[in-house]
Every structure is written in structure tokens, then in C-alpha cells.
Amino acid sequence: MDKKNIDWSNIGFSYIKTDKRFVSNYKDGKWDDGVLTEDDTVVLNECAGVLQYAQTVFEGLKAYTTADGRVVIFRPDLNASRLVDSAKRLEIPPYPEDKFIEAVKAVVNANKDYVPPYGTGATLYLRPYIFGTNPVIGVKPANEYQFRIFATPVGPYFKGGAKPITIKISDFDRAAPHGTGHIKAGLNYAMSLHAIVTAHAEGFDENMYLDAATRTKVEETGGANFLFVTKDGKVVTPKSDSILPSITRRSLMYVAEHYLGLEVEQREVYLDEVKDFAECGLCGTAAVISPVGKIVDHGKEICFPSGMEEMGPVTKKLYETLIGIQLGTIEAPEGWIVEI
Image 1 (cartoon, one colour):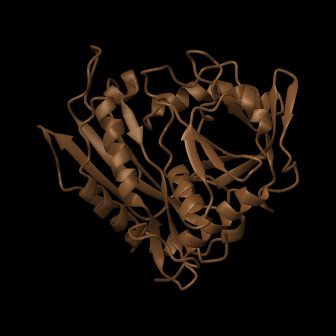
Image 2 (cartoon, helix red, strand yellow; image 1 turned 90 degrees about the vertical axis):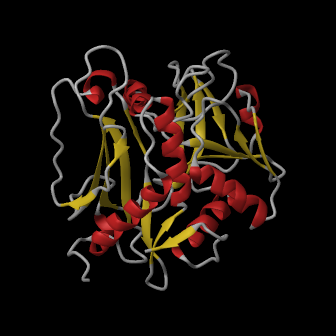
């Protein structure tokens, strides 16, 4: 199959329609077998549950071309299980994990000529999601749903290298204790939009959200987990029941311990200790790690020793190792890489 005629090195992180997507419907208590279709439109009743009460959950993962020319996906089993957890929390019937992985493979295989070549920095982004489709006017779960996966090629998240960003302590709360912060629901991201627009208007790249109960502990940003490095080289990530369990973060912690021999710790991280860390980064599917050079707390600056020019040395090694695993230049742990 020939690659599409796309300027892979210059595409952005935005939607490009591809040839096929997967669609499965839930009705009368069960999911159907699903189909691949060229139709990229969704037709809904005006009173559909997703439109009235935001009953939708989603995932995000990528397909890569490895150094030796294979097309692979990274840890799709974790996306499958996290989608199940998200669905259960919003009273959505979970999509079976084995069927999820089959559908992901089918979508990648059907759009293989959209998987960017190795070395371009671009990847094929996959977006699985479920939403309520039948009319719901009373506040209750829908009883019919649709599961879909589309694919879109996306460019490298950082053009010209990953320069450290500046973030602010947000005055808004991302998630409530015992709320939905630990699942990947559309409603969580809708809540973050005003905060990120506000941050951008003020000249910042992102927000740091604190715990809503005490506003003393670090949680995450609108779409990524935090990762800190101590001055003696320990990798620390915040622990909270209202943080999304990032697959990238879990992978980086494994890499830190088992590939780089670093000490790792997941624990509560207090805002007043952030100034003592040597490095800081945001980790997620899109960029793997976005280095943070400065955090501004209502005019008070916290500047990391790693500076504003490039990633800190430990963060850079973590980034390069995980990218190497994903692209096949470093041997992966068993089960992490699924070949199409």
C-alpha cells in the first residue's frame, strides 16, 4: 500500500479525514459486531443522551512506523481497560476489551497508508469513543450507545524541539474529590476549556491544578500528568484519586526504574515543595513529555534548575528511552508493542 501524498514533517496536531473508521452500536442490551465504514458523519436525535447530559467517554492512542518499517501500536490493552473504567463511572455499557483491540487493529490496518513514515516525527492518532444516542429528557443514562474509532495523522507535537513551557497555578478546580477526575470523560475536558483559554490569554502555556479539597497538593493539568525529578535524581509523580491514570506516565515510571535504574515514587506532592525539584514535565500521549521551565503562582515564580532552553537531563533520557521503545530502536517490555 502506498503512503498518501502528505507533507508528513509539516502537518500539525489537527484532524485530517482518513479512509475508514469503525462503528459499533449498543441496543437491546448488547453490542453488535461493528463495521468499518467510509462515512465520517454521525446522525443523532436532537434529544440524544450525549447532547443533553454529556454521556460520553473517550481514549487516545497512536500507531507508529518503527525503524525497521513495521506498523505498531503502543499498549492498547491499557487504553481498553481504562475505557471500561470510564464507561462504568458514567453508566455506559463497557465495550469489550478484546473487541476494542481488534477494532483498533482494524482501523490502523484499513488506514495504513496514513501511518507516517519513520523519521518524520508524525504518527497516526487513534480516537476511540462511546456516546449515548437515544433520546433522553429525564436525567438518566441512555439505553442505546455508539462506539467509534477514527484515525487521523498528526505531526510532531514539538516543531524544532521540545522547549520548556511556562505554566500557572490555576484558580479553577479541575476535579472534585470523589468526582470524575480519574476517568477520561468529555465533561472533564469541557470544564478545563475556560481555564486554558484564560491561561493562554495571560501568556501561559498550561495550568497546574491543585486538589479541590485543600488546594495544597499538585494534581495535573487539563490533559496531562505531572512528573518531577528531585535533585538527587528520583522520579516523583503525584498520587490522587482524582488524577487520570496516564498510560504514558505509568510507562515512564517503569522506564525510569527498569531501564535507567532510577528510584521512582508515586505520592502526594505538596505545592510548597515544588520549588525544591530539579526538573518538571507534563506527560501524555500527544507529546510524551512536555518540559516545564517555570511555574507562576500569582506572580511568584518557581524556576527549575533545568532552565528554559531544553529538557532537563533526566527528563530527556526518559523521553528518548520511551520514544525509542515506541519506534523499535530500543527493545520493549513484553506486551507493550502490538504489531499490525
